Image 1 (cartoon, rainbow over the protein chains, first blue to last red):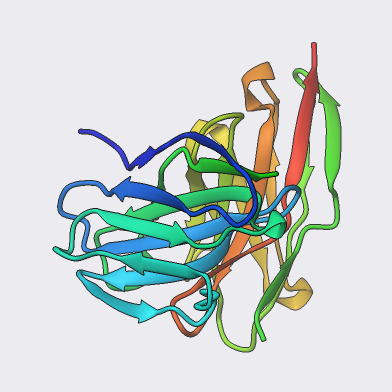
Image 2: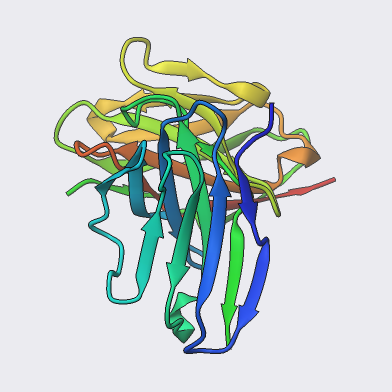
Length: 115
Length: 112
């Protein structure tokens, strides 16, 4: 069974440019998470979806970040415009339970470099 | 607020030596605790988790962790480290809002 798939793996852009990341969770997993991992830090939650509903987006910088999960399957995270401080690894994760007590399955991440 | 502290940023051990990675948490109620491992270029993988019951939990790859409420700790251990264990290890606690809060990680280096 395929794991969580993310693309692109690497992206280098100049500041003020837009960027988008795509995530396809494990089949059947209703809950999808986007995390941001800064260099030398642990992942921090940006947004959590239950099916197509964003149930926790309190940490998402809404002035420049947006996310969608239109059909409750794959998801896109967008940054527009990107800033230097957005350089990080963006991780997508999914699980098959409503509660966090289920195991999260992570993708390999999308590494963003903003110049 | 819930938080996780991993006091060791970087640990180096020889192959075959024992390992203990420290984790302290701050949480008012009984915590749900996790250890994840992140190998270079890989996603995070769950090693083990504690919800309740036996305070010594066994995980994959020969790892175990012990929950000590009195010390607010959940240290990860392995009796004999292999070179393939070199990676970054993250302790995490589940918040009361179903959010996983990660520590800053401990990078493990293994010498032959």
